[in-house]
Amino acid sequence: MTQLNGSARFSLAEASRFTHDILRATGADEATSKAATRAMMHGTRHGVDSHGIRLLPHYVQALEGGRLNKAPSIRVTSSLAAVATLDADHAHGALATYTAMEHATRIADQFGLGAVAIRNSSHFGPAGAYTLDAANRGFIGIAFCNSDSFVRLHDGAERFHGTNPISVAVPTTEANPWLLDMATSAVPYNRVLLYRSLGLPLPPDVASDRDGMDTTDAQSADMLAPLGAAFGFKGAALAGIAEIFSAVLSGMRLSFDIAPMGGPDFSTPRELGAFVMAIKPDAFVERSVFDEGMRRYLETLRSSRARDGASVMAPGDREWAVAETREREGITLDPATAAAFEQLGARYHVSPPNEA
Image 1 (tube, rainbow, N blue to C red):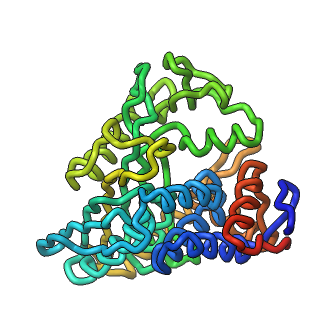
Image 2 (image 1 turned 45 degrees about the vertical axis):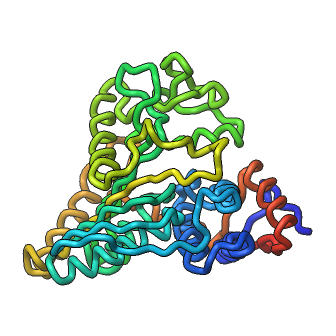
């Protein structure tokens, strides 16, 4: 068997093939395997490695343990004009959220906007995967989700909110949309795990020890800090927005009531909520006017004066640049992920990704 080590490079296509085949080998249905792979590959392709294919071992554990339904029956349980509620039947979060966003865009095409609350979902990975899906269909996409408590409040010394991501994607006449995908914590916890795997120190003001004191030691990090450092009350409030839309509005568990993502219980569904919205620009203004407004906005933004040695980018510009490089050059795996992939390949008799 090919040795998967940190120096080996693999094409995105091979990484996708391996990820999909492993999920199918667990017994997950094709819809689940395709959606989960698509979401993870969004993260890996665009440099959001904390939410990329390094999540595969975790999802395998959740599928095998019973936390995730391998063949869910997702259905709309209520609807009222432009609003709907979707029960995900404890599906993988990617399948639930792609399904909800597809439904939201159909509603928005008719009513100008479509909002879907998601019930009985699970960890959905990179929020930008779903808003990008809406933008690629010509709609403004919005997504919220909460997660188990891991982020202290501003000046707090205990876990309260989850990383509670917020994403917005806006279509443009360019090849790529405007794309915001942010955790409301200073960094996602998967970033801490990645830094642990790589043996790197954390940036300042992003994580705290068990007493709420900031630390750059990834091994000592017990909770995350809210976005904003000295102005962390802003990040904590943004986390509250995600909490209300994803949990309160869907009737699902609040962050501090959700079972930990990392277990030890991998048999009980976590009952996460999420929320997506699609907006049809044409319902508010002529599409040509909207497109010209976005064109001028982005053109002026990118040509604005930057500080010495720096450059100005629109949200998403970094991701598109990373994606272009990785499409051309492939990717490498961090040591922990490489070891996990090797074990998964042997366990399920799936050929490892071929080196690029």
